[in-house]
Image (cartoon, rainbow, N blue to C red; front, top):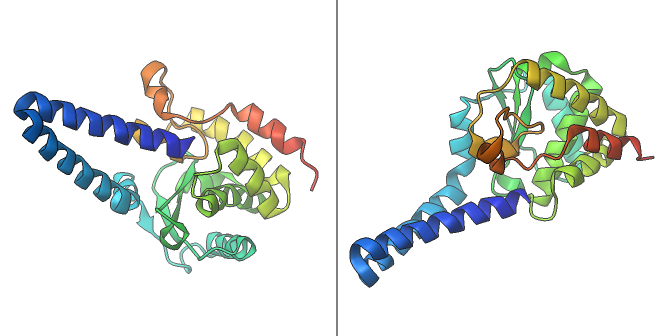
Length: 219
């Protein structure tokens, strides 16, 4: 679903480019607009991860700065048979996390300072398992609920992520994240507090639905 929305909005933007081009310059204008839209989409595909990380002022962290986080990511990437992603930290007390990158070889996991202070090691492991599931399946065949289940299998205990989600929902409501609506779908819990059209960008099912799925699992 995340990937579908991305493609939908890119297609919509392309159509808008062409419409404006046709209005201003007829067939020639539409052709130039199509070329411009194709270039824009290509840049978005190749650089979207860097743009998103910069948008949130995410800072790449070295193993010595956050050894526990690196240890968890390393353990789970080995289990999932994935390359080690780059790890970033976002300076925000709002607890949240996301994964980005065009493929597993060019992936990054970003966590906020708030999530590091809120979750136990086991709960953090559940969150990282969820994010690595998005990387492994590239968000093409897997949505938020499916990634939740896949993440639970990856860390071998569904209660890790269930407990994390309870804390994250409360924490994110108490300290909202200043998030761009177009990137809201990336985060493990919805950072948007608005209603209406802004939530078109959100693909998050209710937290309780995700927790229920986890609690029904027996590993």
